[in-house]
Length: 168
Image (cartoon, rainbow, N blue to C red; front, side, top):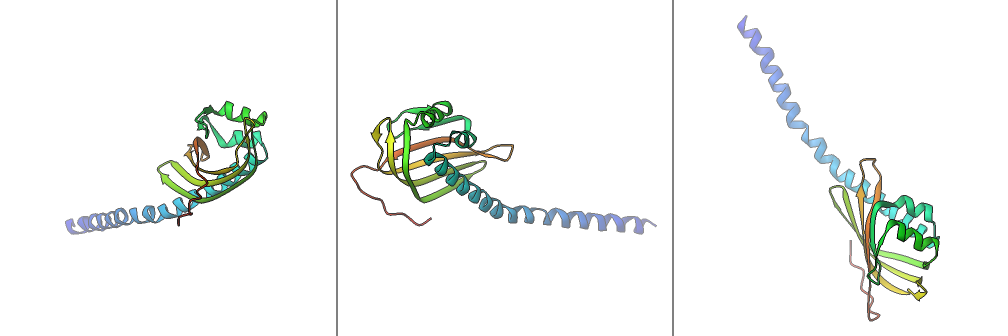
């Protein structure tokens, strides 16, 4: 009688051990899929940002930027979300061409860091903004599931030198 009481306990213990051992495997297998999905979402958002910028689409840009957004212009000015949207409304920043290449995305937890090369034509505060720039854009993945742009910084590539696009 004791023996039959022990057997279910051993079987239960064995099954629990097997389940615990197997549980981490699906979680590990899901990570590459999650990162691939996140990268695809960020690439789509980069395209939405580009389209909004070229079309002076303030409502679209408003949806892309986080409420605590901070951007640093090529001239070193720090802009809040409200200031960035105002620059679009008044056309203080107006791009007629924006070609993006050499996109690199680094995912760190709930943050995506995007580095790219942008070739632009247009004006910023009535000054020509033609040329090549490197930029960093930071996205934060919010509990709602949405990605929002929280930071941006752009640097002009000086001296006419065009960097070669590196492999991603």
